[in-house]
Amino acid sequence: MAARVDLDGKPIKPLTICMIGAGGFIGSHLCEKLMAETPHKVLALDVYSDKIKHLLEPAGAHPWSDRIQFHRLNIKNDSRLEGLIKMSDLTINLAAICTPADYNTRPLDTIYSNFIDALPVVKYCSENNKRLIHFSTCEVYGKTIGSFLPKDSPLRKEPEYFVLKEDESPCIFGPIEKQRWSYACAKQLIERLIYAEGAENGLEFTIVRPFNWIGPRMDFIPGIDGPSEGVPRVLACFSNNLLRHEPLKLVDGGVSQRTFVYIKDAIEAVMLMIENPARANGHIFNVGNPNNEVTVRQLAEMMTDVYSKVSGEPSLEEPTVDVSSQEFYGAGYDDSDKRIPDMTIINKQLGWDPKTSLWDLLESTLTYQHRTYAEAMKQAIAKPAAN
Ligand SMILES: NC(=O)c1ccc[n+]([C@@H]2O[C@H](COP(=O)([O-])OP(=O)(O)OC[C@H]3O[C@@H](n4cnc5c(N)ncnc54)[C@H](O)[C@@H]3O)[C@@H](O)[C@H]2O)c1
Ligand SMILES: O=C(O)[C@H]1O[C@H](OP(=O)(O)OP(=O)(O)OC[C@H]2O[C@@H](n3ccc(=O)[nH]c3=O)[C@H](O)[C@@H]2O)[C@H](O)[C@@H](O)[C@@H]1O
Image (cartoon, rainbow, N blue to C red):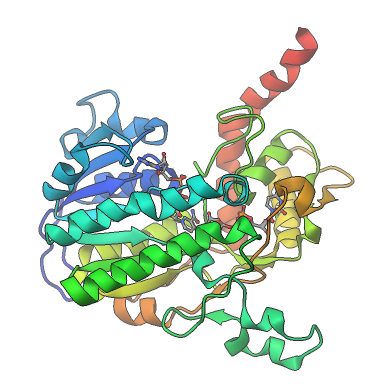
């Protein structure tokens, strides 16, 4: 493997990385990239390993086998955590409950997972002088300032009323009874704590705010590789509907807007943070693709078209159906109206730009979904009839 250099042309020394939540969607892509393209070692911590099984098994069979070690543990209650952090140069914390269906129905688990359980990780990094890359969320911005203006106000079109900037935008959440915001609020407080550890105790940290990263292995398909009654994030919900040949459910009219970024583009940004500490430390980074904005309704329409193309199956005459958030998520749901990341800081510090268009990223992701799940879905649908 050719010697790696950082953005300033300096050689990068091989690192040992303690990756907490390595078995999840983002963790699996990050592990893949680190194994295939770098000499770094990964101590992969998670309660599940299914999504990184292909990197771990068969034992000893891959060129990277001696650079990745899986530790099955729950960071809530495992005394091995501090030792693993101490053995590493860098800790990356991805562990969290991060599906909106949980925020209003399991608010205690959500707050514990995103704040309380992250506390020891921050403490061990700070006490042992270890660098921390912590995964927060774009949800810390909450709603846009523009959403509070009258519907016909021309100011709604001015970027300063909706573009989200790390060092300027306020965090605007709904009332406490809208428990949707339990996640965003817990993430905001852990960001503030990490920032304070940096300011008062010299912790070297980087905070990542992902803006709707999507791609293969995201969440689960209900009834196939996850609970039938489970509600994953929108990519997996819509994939599930498409695989079942049922209409895609639009919550409250599908008017909310999101910017989607391809997981493989986003992972490039994380790699730059890992390998350029001098440029990344002390910063909070938006990581998203401001060019890929759609309403949820437009996303549903595009996914329907792309799926029909990659599966060769015609789409339904009525491809979407409206559903209220009360019915879909239950009481206490609320929504972010619009999420456009400002890219100035990540551009300046790391020179990163996303590349993949929404159509292209949906095409590769839905090709994966079709290849991975279509057959299992056919069998699952046929089963009840056979009984
Ligand atoms: N995917 C996105 O676009 C996105 C957007 C915003 C924020 N994030 C943040 O990025 C991080 C990773 O997200 P993801 O999409 O990969 O989610 P994910 O659910 O796929 O991954 C999280 C992983 O953490 C593990 N985990 C949770 N609690 C744990 C515990 N107590 N002990 C050990 N392991 C535990 C889970 O088993 C899971 O494998 C989260 O912090 C999330 O809030 C992701
Ligand atoms: O991915 C992110 O950047 C962050 O945002 C997500 O929040 P959100 O975008 O609201 O989550 P999704 O479940 O992907 O929903 C997106 C939109 O689609 C809508 N939706 C979802 C599912 C569905 O079947 N139909 C539908 O209309 C939701 O109401 C919402 O407006 C999650 O909170 C986190 O994963 C993360 O922190």
